[in-house]
Structure formats: structure tokens, C-alpha cells
Image (cartoon, rainbow, N blue to C red; front, side, top):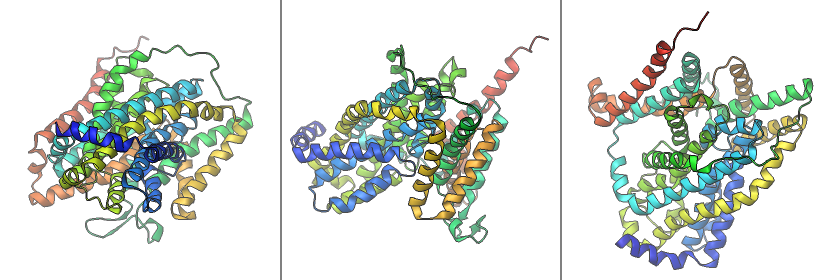
Length: 494
């Protein structure tokens, strides 16, 4: 009952004019930050922290909650309309969101994304409020071996199930693994594939790869179409009949998955989104429509990556262990205001911490309201002629990438990956497995090496946990099901 008494005590503090204005302003800014490629919730909050020194703690944290939730939804806007994930968590939204926009269903895709994001964020905030201590205990059960198998499952699933040709999906994954090796070995300090280039010593920035593989190829396509064909962007002006009730099971499943992924440190919304999309496609009898503009393929990743937001803060607030970069920045915001994360935070400052968790819930509602008004403006990007839109996209990506580290080297690297991504698409090699491998590959390598260090190079340590066996079984199913379907399919009639 202490939880509910603390919630009731925090509500009056939350519903004051300064806090409400902070939540509204933070949510609006967050949506804009998420919609700009190259920017992220982490960057937005990091820029905000110095501006909050003189603010009341709950005002500052209300603004942080708004930026966090808003940015996670905002990343879906360019992902759907322009095939540019505004944030890494928007990768999976591209798979079906952009095809929907190409079919003239951009407004519907944006509405599905907004509703799914709001529901995911709301469920995540409730989980944070009610389940923080027990869920944090579950996360602590993951050993390095479990993390290794989890990362391997994520890469295998997306490589095999995203492409009609699993071999091409695995080839894309191998490319991502190689890119993920570039830089300084975190455990030995050895240089790997950096070729004595100082710019490569810290590795290849995921935003550079992400923008190159997902933003430049459609811009090249638009430019080609502008030169050789006269086409207008489709914009569905008729009411699209859509049964929203069909998304309820998707929202339930993806919310749960997003919360579970969120409480496991080092994963994050991008992993939750891809796994949710993959699980939705796997469990849907009509899975051939995924990747071609299936509404459920937008709802699942958007709900999951937003269900990850508040859940990521569970180990951060209760144990002081940030599960992601954005959680680490939020912990910094707490420390700036004299609040020390950990069990003592709930004991010493319950009204502030419960007020922050409630702000995560109410900014999810504000995100829906602001998004409903903003969607009418966002959709007009589809009316821009391809000859104008292509250079706009390239210019926006160049500015976004340059602004990260003021590096022209990263701009040229992004353009290289763009040309590579265009060639991969022409050969029907999916680009998403490469991006996910860059994210999960280093995690798998680090977890494997740490597990072997702990066990004294005993490989049996990798299969001692029941969690590891569950992950191994899921990997086996992922690899066997496509082979079984292939052999089960009757030979084509001649």
C-alpha cells in the first residue's frame, strides 16, 4: 500500500502549472528531436540538463520525461514518411511503415504509430510504478552467458526471418559484425580494422551506419524516379477502413515484450522493436504481408520500443544501474538535483521519484494529444515532388551527421554506406540485419569473452543457466522452421 500512498502524495505536486508546462514543452521538443535524423532522446536530455540547474527537481524531471517519450515516438515519423529512422529504435518501423506510405496509407500508419507508442509508453510507466523492485530482481539473473545467447538470438531471428532468402540475411548480418569490430578492443586495447585512421579508433557510429543504409538509398531512388519518370507521391484522400480492434492482441504482446526487454540492461528500444516485429510476423498466419505494408508490422515495433522507455529506468532507479545510454543521462539529471539513485531514493525522496514516474505516464497521454494535431502537418511531406525531396533528404542527413562530431569523415562514411545500401537493395539483400548486428555483435562478443574469463575458458559455462537453454531453443526454432517449411512445400507443378 506504500506505493499507492506515495502516488497519491505525488499527484498534487505533479499537477502544478510549472510541471504541466514542462511536460507539454518537453513532449513537443522530444517529438521534434526524434523526428530529426542524427538526434536522439539521449542527446536531447543531455543538452537539457545544464538548463535545469535552477529548476525545481520535479519540473526538470517532467521535462526529461516528455523529451524521452516524445523522442521515441518522433523517430517513427521520418521512418514512415521518408524511410529514415529518426532514432535507432525506429529501424523496425521502416519495414512496414514506409511501404504503407508508398501505398497511400501514410496517415493511417502515423495514427497507428501514435496510438501504439502512447499505449506502450503508458504500460511501461505503469510497470515502472508497480513492478520496479521485483522486475529489477529478474534482470539481475541474466549472466554474461545469457546475454551472449540473447544477442545471438536477436541477430539470427532478424537475419533468417526478414529476408525471403536466409542466406542473404546472414550475409547482411556478417557485414554488420565486421563493421561492429572496427575500433579499439574494449578488453585488450588492441586496434581492429582502424587502418591507423584516428576517426575509426572509436568505432563506426551507429547513427552514421543507420542513416547511410536507410536514408540515402530511398533518396537515390527518388532522384532516379524524378529523372526518368513523372510520379507524384501517393496521398490517400479517402477514409481507410481499418479495424483497430485487430491491434489489441498486438499491443498486449508487444507491451509485455518491451517491458521485459527494457528491464534487461544494455538492450534498449531498438532491440525491443525488432524482436516485437519479428515475433508478430512469426506468430501471424498471414506473415507474407509483413515488409509490404502490414499495419500490425507498424503497431508491434512502435508499441514495444515505447514500452521499453520507462522499463529501462527500473534497474536505474532501484539499483542505480543504467540499462541504456539514455538511462545513464537521466541518472545524471537526478544527481544534478541532489537525488541519488538506488533503494534510498524511494526512502528519502518518494514524492519526487513517484512524481517522475507519474510524469512518464502523463507525458504518454500528452504525446497522443500533441501527435494527433501534428500528424496533419507531418503528412504533407508526401506532397513534395521527388525532385525536391531527394536533395532535401540528402542535405538533412549530411547536416545531421556532421553535427554529431563536426566530422566530414563521418559524412563521407555515411554516403559510402548509402551507396552500399542501395547496391544491397538492388540485390535484394536486407540492410536491417547489418544494423542490428552492429548493435548486438559487440554485446555478444563482450558477453562471450566475459563468460569465458569468469569460467576459466570452460565452454560448458555457456549452457549452465535455464535462461541460456531457453535462448538456445529459440535460436534452434528460428533456424529450423524456415528449413521445415521449405521441405514441406510441395514441388511446383511443371
